[in-house]
Image 1 (spheres, rainbow, N blue to C red):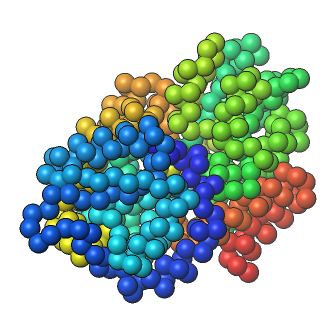
Image 2: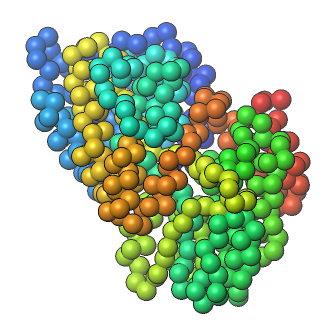
Image 3: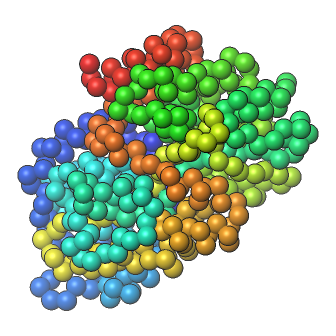
Length: 417
């Protein structure tokens, strides 16, 4: 699975311009070609995603083959690089050659759905019950569900158990506890805390738990609640508890710093667990991200991919694609995919079962219960707000502006004013 760690940083230009291009296509992408099917029985369908990694592609091919078999079809599985997926989908929508089954990063769904290129899943009786609220919202456009994710991801606080024990530090639950713990854990050659604050959607992704949990909102960025969240990150850098290099670090860099013992705590996702488990003599734990004060509800961003059924000229192929999609999202496949990829099953009952079986995922399962999709408030306008947020982070952490000034500018970017 391509982790949500890499999703926000990808295709920034495409995300910012895609709405304009899609609007031009909106009148002409509703009826694709038959993609090789004949008037007789449908025996094969096509599927497109961005799982180009050899092992990921093989895993998904195996899953698609199994679900295709249950639907009575062969699934011809193709993967393209992540940065190429949306441009390819735009081209296919224009030429009416969309695949029968299409995977999308969840923030992209609304942009594609607004063109009329996707079929609502209720047309095919796909079961959408039991999904966490945020997960279902991520696949919804104007009240209709167009995509479902078998499993999802979010972020949490990873910590080095040995370092915390040696320093006599408890796992922080609030922002004040986080600052105090980070300060005690900092020493020459090691920082107490690390986040990804780089100038991409990945930096925005990591900031969202602090913004949202404190009552901030992307619809209005220049609020006291948002400024408090940004001030926390500024304080961690100013105090020396967090490296100024976080302005350039990716989530992969955070992982490397953590494994090397150069940071005692970091924000990251469950896609790191496999590599952490393979690191000798590293005793780590994971906990929910701290909130400003006790009693606040932690709200984290929802990452992951949704599977959709594009509209084509063949209703029969669409029906088969919907059957495969439903199969991918049944409890058995959902649980298997989660275990395979260290992700969280999208149905809450399956997720609860998973947390018992894989304790290292319990914090992520808990966080997903209240997780939000990034496009839920602004829809296709989300990329502008995301750009404003990471721009504000950069300005505040470098001392160019106060958090209040930086977020006022972020609001101007978000609204285009």
